[in-house]
Image 1 (cartoon, rainbow, N blue to C red):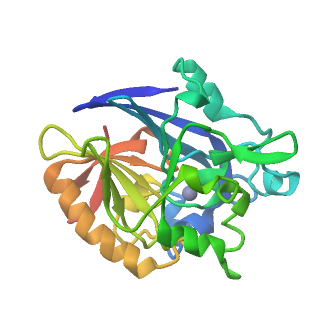
Image 2 (image 1 turned 135 degrees about the vertical axis):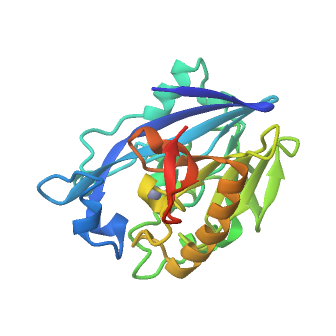
Image 3 (image 1 turned 120 degrees about the vertical axis):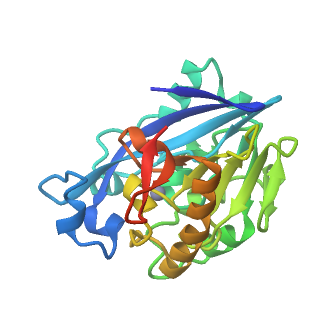
Length: 284
Ligand SMILES: [Zn+2]
């Protein structure tokens, strides 16, 4: 399902690029199962089903795709680990539903380079790996690129270089920190924390309320609660500190947040505070 939100000068199209599964312990980190099982159901292997949420932003003449999901290059081994039944070009299907083709995409801006967020950057065509969007500019945080290019024993399983190295240099723009695009309507907001160069995508509202695609800074609705930090975060204390500042601002300004992996209605939410001072997600 594609949800359309008109937001100030932009149109936001929100959808999921399919589903995959991940071990509950990985996504909930230090939060014990006795707590998270009240909110989420898992299968017999302790696997939790996740969405691969993304947005397409139409602003002026730009068609900007943020995360590109798992893509179509997955081998059988990875497909088994992620419990993905079949490999399909779901992003291509969503674009077709919107009467767009890959040629219409002007920018590709993944929140970070983990394989579940940029797998659809490239595809295999005639035994060669090529960009999925031949006319687009791919914008990456330089810190993220550098870390993804020299993975260590912990990050090797999350960065697959065929998702980004086949993109020719003239199609890439590297940025370092915050950057505005589309006539200042969109800010790429550096966060780090989840990965070295993770960024959130912020679309300016008419008032103080912005629409923010959070990427993996807030994968699930329960991550709005401060101590719920994912075990996939490379720098968990940075996540906590970032969330502390960001959630205060999100509550005060009633920002609308789009979460990266949530399946329930809170996948687009605002932030509320309960009478115990705890931040919670409320479906938007
Ligand atoms: Zn993710």
